[in-house]
Length: 489
Image (cartoon, rainbow, N blue to C red):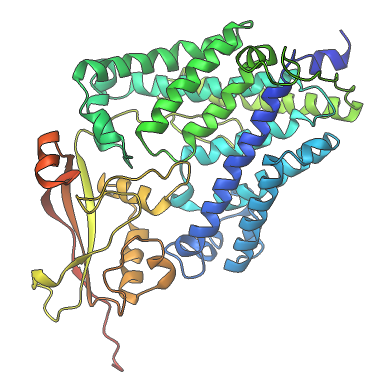
């Protein structure tokens, strides 16, 4: 077999390439949009954890980013909105109409731009799906354009990415809390997950036998099915369909940013065109569709580049592969500064009770006046018990997610301390990240944070009160605080 055949004889995966490139680009679009809307308030010049302070203590080689050279909120917005526009062209399929270097360049620009953001994003960008998007964006850059056949090595590597993602998550659970081994994890998870959605309360109230079946199905989907991604067709396509369906169940029962959506996109690397045309016969090349022209031979430079990139990815696979079988398996870990070939996993343990931190302000002279305290409301995290949880994924509400971790007892609370300061100052960018500001005319005099135990209302309680949640006070997280009084005041 010649070099062309060895690298590019991927069978018939042209439709899969379209799904992979456009789907990953769509996730990039959402990620850059989330950054444009939230980064300045969280990490900007007047943010909770300013980037300028961070990069002054960090070497470029430890966390490559354009912002080591210079940071400004304006520069950040230009990068973010530029990423949105570039991703939109890939979603529309425009660069894919040109030579193979054109979509490659577009994806590498998205990868480099988002890497610059993630590497200075600190705790607000510490989620596993950030690394997943960066790795996926880099890999699909080398799928070529419509002019050439999809490279076999890249198609196989995307499957290896999905395998690490699913199998790694399954092993984390088996090595984690006993609730995954005794099949009770999902009797709690729908209620205690970071950000429930409109269906979460309904699913939570389903019978225990159903939740045990969920856990068992999860183990099969994550520990058994991924192996068949590497099987001959049509077995690989069936395995991909099973994984896509399990991810869709997570989509309809929770808000996990773009984690589930990008996984659904990536599993299509195991679906060949014959499977697509069997389900959708009207597609080009199907019995009811138009004929499809054979792709041209890839230029030699592209063949050699794909081989070189494949070799690099294989070498970088050593560390995450070793991690999969390690006794102390790392979860959501990057083994290099470029977030390539990472380790993944989530929810090794499941929280049994849900606690929420409710942020309140008061304009009264006496902080002991309980009637003067008013609660700030977030977009996604539970607050008002009468409010139905909303659907936000694949959009990522970064502040809301960190509020969930804060209630779990994370140690680094610097960002939350500054958050309270910004509310006392009436900082407009910070307030725009909230759904309800109870002090629209002037900032409050005092701030506090109270801890509550939340649980879903039963059907009878919901019919009686109309509330989706039942909450019980559990003490103070931060007792009343105020800004220092200026000596000149």
